[in-house]
Each structure stands twice: as C-alpha cells, then as structure tokens.
Image 1 (cartoon, protein in one colour):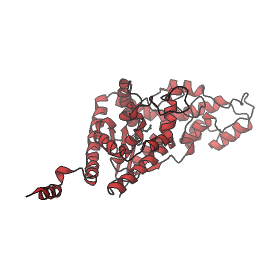
Image 2 (cartoon, helix red, strand yellow):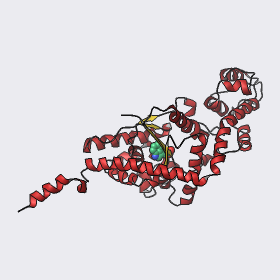
Image 3 (cartoon, protein in one colour):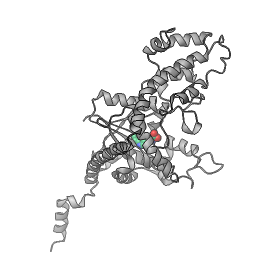
Length: 370
Ligand code: TRP
C-alpha cells in the first residue's frame, strides 16, 4: 500500500513562522518530492468550533486566511487536495462510530486535552484540573473527531508538531480497536516530525517557549517587511549580553534559534560575507564582541528572503478570492468521495449495510417463511 499524507490546521488565526518551520515548509517539500499516492491538507473548522462555538465569524474569516497561507507557501492544488473539514459530512459519521470505541477515562488521560482544558480556562474555579461542567462535550471528544479526520483517507503519514503526538497515539488505538472489532478496514498512521529540532517548537519573539497568537509574540507569514523589521529589531535576546564586548549566550536565544531554523549556507555570501557559517557567528557571539543589532539585521535579511516569494504569491491569490474558494470546493468534493468509500467499507464491516446485503434479506425472509 502506498503512502497517503494528511495534515491540517485550525482556522483560529493567520499562520506564523512557527507553523511555517514546524510544518508548512515540510509539507511543500513532501508535496514536491512526490513518492506518495495522495496528499491532503485541510482546514479544521469543525475542530476550531469545539472551543469557539460563540465565535463563528472568527472561524469563518480564518478559513480564508489559512487557505491563503497554504497557497502562498506553495501548496499546489494540482498535487494536494485542499479541503474544509465541515464540507465533508462523512467525517461526522465516522466520528460517531469511533466514539463507541473510546472510554471517557481514556479521553481524560489525553495529555493534550488536559493541558488545553487548563489553558482555555474551561476548568472550574479553584480546581487544579477539572473535567466538570465547564468543558463542552464536543471539545472533550475532539481527539475522536481528529481520528476520523486522519482515517477517512487511510492516511499513513501525518506531518504535525510534536504537541500532536498524543492525538496520533489515540488515533492508532482507535484504528486497532476498530480493526480488531469489525475487521481490517483502517490503517494506523505515523507521525512525521520536522528533522531539524530548532523547528519543532519555535520560541516567540519575546523569548517565551512558543510562538502563539494569544501571547502576541508572532511573526506572521502575511506580515509586511516593515512589520517584520519592527518585530525582529525588538526581539528578546540574551539579557546578560549588555555590552557588545560581553560574552553572549546562544542557547535559547531566539535570534539564534530562528537562524538555526531559517538560515542556509548561501545566506552568508549574500548577506553577511564576514562569516562563512552560522557556527562562526555563534562562536563570535559567545566570545563577546558581536552585537545583537548585527545579528538581527542578518536575521531580518534571511527572513525577508524566505518571506518574499510567500508574500508575492499571497498578493496574487488575494486578487482572486473566488478562485481560492473554487479550489476549496473542488478539494472538498474530492475528499468527500474518498470519505464515502472508506465509510462504505466501515459500514460493511460493522454490518450496517442493510440495503446492500441481499443475503441478509433472503436469510430473514427464509426464517419467517411458512
Ligand atoms: N489539532 C491540529 C492542530 O491543532 C489540527 C488538526 C485537526 C489535525 N485534525 C487533524 C492535524 C488531523 C493533523 C491531522 O493543529
């Protein structure tokens, strides 16, 4: 069996550099490398609604933003099926059947659900962690829905960030449970993490562990050059590196983490011929005598070089919004076909195929014949 690649994002905001190095860049590489049967990338609006039930307009606006981000980083609708989760109704039915195979206790143990419940303040006041009345059922069960997202196309390979590992583990358990209960219909997926560890969790411009919209420390793919400049020049660095002569720390210094994630060998010749490699820059910074501003200017050149083609493509697509919706409509129809086939096989295995089963009808007719 060939490789089927699937991944997606919640449309709760524009995508930023953390998404780019953690996943988007790798998707485009996968897309262009070939060697797969099919590749799907989707906008998880149903999942976004699990904790944004009262914000449908926000989700709706961000479906387009995420679609524009996808197209602008270079996902090619001729190679990749791009679709909207809610436009593939079979996903709900698959979720329903899966939910019979998962216990409440297992969901409560899902580490991602646990931390997200804390983060979103669904827990009850004064309690360390609560699965009490504040947690919407749909949010609590979203790992099951995510398993349906992955299984509808029998995905083998799911490129996501490491925070999604518990979701994949839960999905694999559901697949094993389905196959052993009803028959070997579904496929166990594998997670695909970025090989460059600097890319697995990009820190925010403020040095906090994660680039995150709610922390306001993001550089967005759609930021214009002046915004990127403002953000880079005011980035957090090593607080102990007060004077240029002072030795500086590179580890955990976001300027260097970003350089680890973005910089290529040819960037030195083009933007900073004083150095031949990032290792040389780091050595100088550690020794002392290299100022933050110089490093930031180099980073800014590197980032703008990577972002320029993305901005140009975004600008083009922004002039053709109906065309973007056409791509999503076509992709959703294709995904629906694939989902319908998998659902057909699932229903056969689950014996809920009454109208397709002539033998069943004949057998029961025989039983009652007198
Ligand atoms: N949970 C993912 C996120 O928050 C989005 C997502 C939903 C997803 N369904 C998926 C990712 C299926 C991969 C596969 O980013």
